[in-house]
Length: 187
Length: 187
DNA sequence: AGGTGCATGTAACAGGTTACATGATTAA
DNA sequence: TTAATCATGTAACCTGTTACATGCACCT
Image (cartoon, rainbow over all chains, first blue to last red; front, side, top):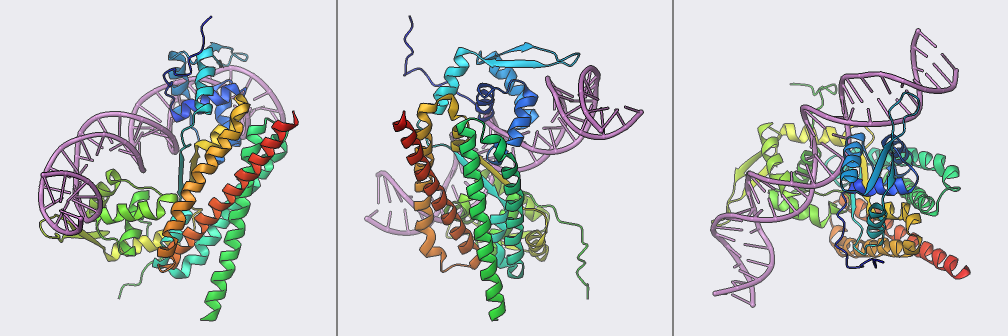
């Protein structure tokens, strides 16, 4: 009986490959279902598009990490995927890896605020626009909350974190708007 | 005397183009200086690399938004840029635009947490790894704080926001770690 | 003499989005 | 019958990173 070697060479996964393996383990089994579900849930901290998903499904199958079989619904073509043993191992290897998890943020609102000394009279509007965006996002996160509280723990935790983060940002914006308004009055 | 038309067709700027215009207005005048400064300050919410900066400087000059002139320091080649009128207008037009500012986050830690039901015994380690990352980032943000408090208001505000956001995340991680540890004990 | 910082630049690659094409099924 | 939803897929494009090459200036 083969003993799993913890020194096994790491299976390299692309970012989208990780999402796909995770989503299949989660029970999302077609490309369409993965995309729809990502948009409704993980979208807040991770995006995915068809242009990445479908080619990546093929590559993962070629590498033996997933297995697809046709399962048409009526006359509508449909391919259902499942994890192979190697795929499960690759997913767990990634989840268990000790590397510092990557973090990339591109926030145009903060960028505008950073440069707002070039147009100081618009500064408060920039903060307001950030708050409006966060309020819209918060409404979306809250709308999926009742659904997620019945779901797995992991997705529930990220939702709670997202809501908390967004609420904090809104409060910060409100306080900053008050401060900026007070400064304008002083003059 | 020409009256500026508020209906003027929008000057399209690439993301990096915006950063460059903003940074030149900020007083950062060479490609090297822009890159170094971004890495020390805006890096937390916006990254830039030489591979983007130098070609973009050329494109912005071709479009007449910036003007460069050679200003070698000793025998070392050096090009110093300044905004043209059109460049200043483009920057202000962007800063004043009412569009919802874009926001893109890719957080591998949250992605792992989301999928952690596939490897529940590692969940607490995933949260710890996120906290470790945030603590490292917080240390960096705090290290530039004394310097920024003397600087322009915009950059100071984004720094404060970054620090607050990071502190909140660390507290959330601590609370979640305690909760997960308690749940394990119960069993 | 050697390391660090200043300074510019590019080629190869990676990763991702947008827009489009196609077509079946289902609910109003 | 028509709109929305389910479902797959790709080509063109955009944006960005990594790794490398080059060389001067300054400090120790």
